[in-house]
Image (cartoon, rainbow, N blue to C red; front, side, top):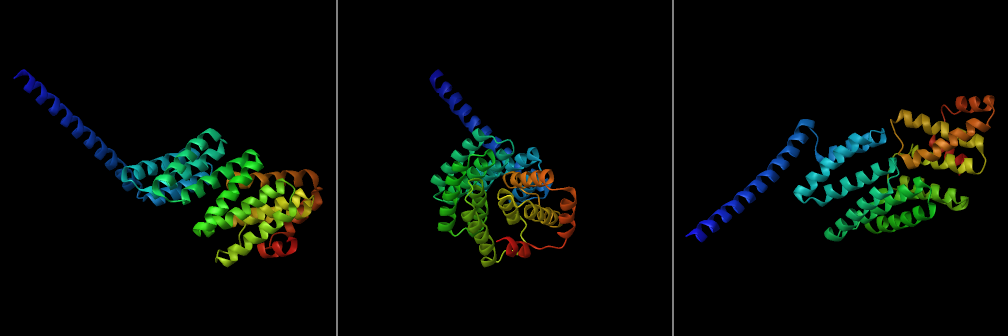
Length: 284
């Protein structure tokens, strides 16, 4: 009789524990849903907002949103939300150049790709690693990862990533003084944008062009392109990401130090109405 009572107590305790665990999970899911409703944002909108916050330099808020989406994705077994949230967190690791955090997130993206059979997460992993190593200054590692990203994006038909990584790879080539290859990559970047119907007045590619000119000691040309880049960023409300703004800041610092004040100001004034197409044709 005592044995029967003991078994009954154990079973009851186990069932109660399961009920509590189930209720806890339901409460967590409901809490996340409530947060979304309070913010009136879908998970996709939360990721968009996280990206905007990152570009504006508010990493704390950006990481908080990305982690919320990551939790939602895991609770719902939604591979897309998990992968995009992990990618967003990879981007945040760039600011502090936290390579250990990137390694941890990269492993999770690799596991997700293996589990889901979706190679796009390997593409994002490669791209984010390339961006980090370019920012750190390890161009050989950056080049290796960009090549991996380009191969996968082309295979999957992800033309947005395929296009932008031509722009990114040009920085690697410029840093390695391979100006011929860098020029080809910048030209192909703009050609791909045109082929795929992206807006023509793209200021991002001008960062690579300014860096390309500065590294060949064409400081007046570099200053002209950098000035137009900043104007377009302001007009288009664009906040460049850390790996991309780093060479632009380098260009701006050098031309301000090396150009005489008259030339420096004249170029600023004469660049006021110049377009992307004009600069591409002039220097490429």
